[in-house]
Image 1 (cartoon, rainbow over the protein chains, first blue to last red):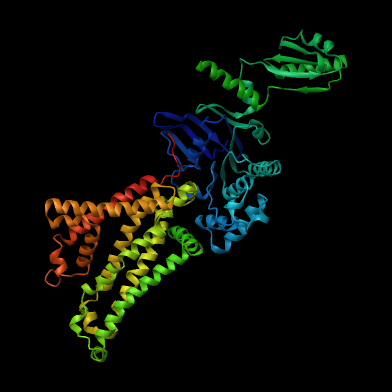
Image 2 (image 1 turned 30 degrees about the vertical axis):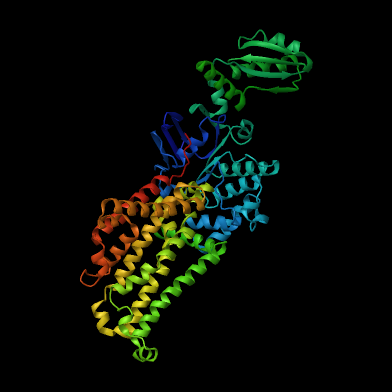
Length: 314
Length: 282
């Protein structure tokens, strides 16, 4: 992977309170979901990534340079903060123009750039309205516009979906997906796993300031050996299917879901089981109505990982 | 826009905001009063240059101040109150508002260094302070050269405009450091103003008490007003033989400069410590 951002054993302590600890990762182009419950250290990690906080230990590099107070990095970095950082008396367009001027763009360049950013987040009609009169959702969208108005290569978004309405949320998710597809490094934090799952399978999971897992969520799932994969199948004759499946050594357990004519399989070898399953279905002429992996998702992986940590802590 | 001019964006923004906001009328009023004070000195130069006018109104030249180096310190010191008010009105919200709006992180996650950020903020205040000190007093100097002193005066005092400008910059730097320090400590501009007034009154009271206790005029050095007066006399090259004020103030220009420098440096150190992109809550 061509790493645009490198985190090497990064730790941040606030006195005796640990913000994050021992975080190492290499992030390349695309959307990366930074997941964790409130207080996990997501905001601290994003601020360390953005060079706004000096790590107590370790090293952060963006495009090969330390971002802290690094003007060259900030030219290529867009940061959407967790809190508001607006001048409420200014219209949004003026605010963005002012911000773009600070990025070094000329007086003639900033207006079209600001308008384009506002259009992207759907605030064109509100461009001349005072920011103080904006709703929470509009302010969130303006924060996004502010983060991307200067066309950065790395975009760090701290809970950008908080407080947005469904339409704004859909638009924002679409935008973030597009930025990732365009080859930008987009790190988005959220404590709502479902939101991230809509965007990417590439995740970083934090809990209590530590990195629990990093990478593709499916690969991370495969590494969790102590938890068998679950496969849920619905078909008209589940008993026939289960009688054949129970003979397979890959199947650990079968649970019947009587009300829904379904069976829940547990296996440590999902790939082999899928092959065998295909063979059985053809041989028995079974019509599969539904087949899902209920625990091959971000929430399940996160639950497994944090459950383990809780037990350790206990 | 080149990097070295990036701070100008901050200054320009604040200047626009000041003249668009509620404080505009107060600012204009202060500038008008400052101008009126300078007009008095302009009138003195004019009257002294105009013997017919003196004769007409029966004014004796010796009743008016002499136009010498010390003369140009009077309009600078006469602006003290105006400079103080400008500092409070213009400077108190410069950083406090950013802290309130959580905007420091916003600035410092841009290609802008903390020094450029502070320079942008300071320059807003400096514009106003120089507008009531260096600019009009240099105009007074030019007026004196044209009206009265002529080539001889210019030849003898060619460096005076530089000294006036430099002294005005010292005033601006000091006021800027103090108000930015106060502004960086609070989230409401009004509180920063109260803090500065408290500091100003407090140190003057302290200087007075200590002076009474130890019966020494040397402790006048603790009063910033006297420090500026003494420093101004020194920077404008006024000698003890020429000025009763120099003889009265029982400390040197260097000592006054040291006090001003120490206070400025402490204030700047506090500002530097406070300018952090992230509010750390322990």
